[in-house]
Image 1 (tube, rainbow over the protein chains, first blue to last red):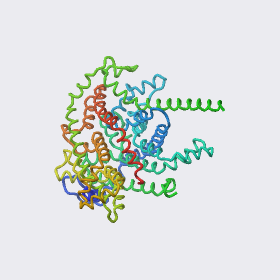
Image 2: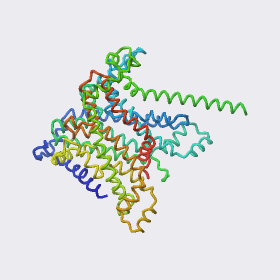
Image 3: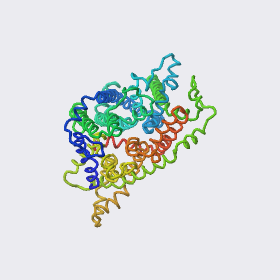
Length: 282
Length: 286
């Protein structure tokens, strides 16, 4: 216990409150922080890049969250079928998510390269003019979403475990009552799986709010994300903090991020009682 | 009657074939990027860029691997990563197991509430605490090397590992602790001599996840590591990408070299691995 208490205080409680304090100061990491009141926040709300990065992060989250849920659940349902060689399929489905993220980024900018990538070559064969993918302002966000969908192995495995823990009697009874596949899915699978869905959605949300590595790697190498089309919130925060050394300003961004994610989490938990079904309570 | 059975078996055969077709199609789509990476890594540059695409490299240009590996100090990156992984694994095994012990095998007031607080810190954005931490490590002269990434793991910072170990400790019968207590063992002896030896599978899972985490970690080293000679594999890859952007076979050879160890490791430890993730997801309620 006690190591965690020290760790909690030193690596969590202290920095959390220090972030709030720094956010009201002018601070570059060398001189001691100077109190400037709400100036950082005022500046923040006049910073167009702040809004761009916030918008891009929301855009990514709004598409990635439902899509990854549907894809992960879909893959898990496929793997839950009673077929031979299930373990092999499961391995193939899962492997993309353990590929180092930087390597995944390299692979994706290569296969989706607008001029020399295999994807546009294949599209050409069926007489479709492929888009510019990571290089195009319109397609760069969808490209990153595709990259995210490729690595949904983790939620997929959790859904699969959830599916396998649903008692098969429920399906047998439902089948006797003449319930068709879609109805069985709606009435049994989804409610029984809802706690797992909530868990995965929370994890995905945390990951979306912290979306960084992919954009940093790909934009940092000039291989995509034209202009500010894929500037993400924490990436902008990172640049402000570690390239411009505006630690006060970036602390204000960090605290703002905390407030937003806290609001989203509270709303999610509050509304979850309406759609999450806990067997023990029912 | 016979007709009914026949049509049912035929129906079964058809749906089973259909399922395989769907599964294979999805496998091809999901497996293709990795396959294409491996194929590209064995081509000459003109072959990699050829239109129409060259599917099978001819000849297999294995020399791309030694070439790119010696062009940047790739073995050094691997060594750095192994060092980073080994240190944090030591930290996690020592501290997270102790913390997990306190959260599962000892009864104290407010335990479950404090545990909930600990788990809920997972929801707080990483960046919300990053800046003061960076300043703190800088004042301690720890920035520039792996210290800021290693030290916290000795203080139970890996909540995921703690969570996993706690779930496991909870499943061990209370009677083993009671028996040791009758023999006069104190809590630390019970932890050290009774619980830990029984928890090898759980510790193996934690070690595995920690290794994969370190191997793939990009953000931590990006913030704290400055000198290229201390780069881990992930930062090394971006270095290769920045230097040899026009030489895709080399870039893909490096990506393959960084990916293969993890994929091979996964092949041999699949069961432990997938079980660990399942516990993480469904043990939440337990």
